[in-house]
Length: 144
View 1 (cartoon, rainbow, N blue to C red):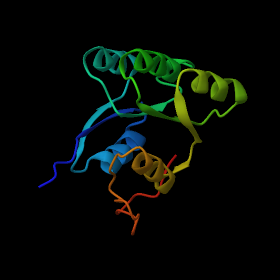
View 2: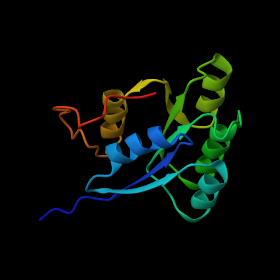
View 3: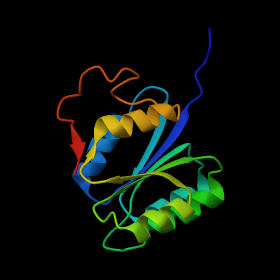
């Protein structure tokens, strides 16, 4: 029987409701999920663990560059990780800085969960939607 490689997923989001939705999206068999709410927590976790897929808010706890700091640390310790940035502040300088730090995806809030799930699936990471996205899990539609 073929064993599926466990994917390590990190969610960094300071808004509890959004973090809860993302946890529900990624808390599936085949994933090892870590969810944190602050920049210090994210940096501490990144010191000891490597991740395959990282979702981070751009502004954490009011810090304009919080998500950028997460991406910088992830770039040093998570070789090859897919990084997805969520932001309510999608200006060009944020997009360019995120791209320079290795973010492959930059989504404006409210972000469609199907889009997040599709990007995760493309990176080999499972979600509550599964590969086919058949149906939307109860209470899940967008991260806003």
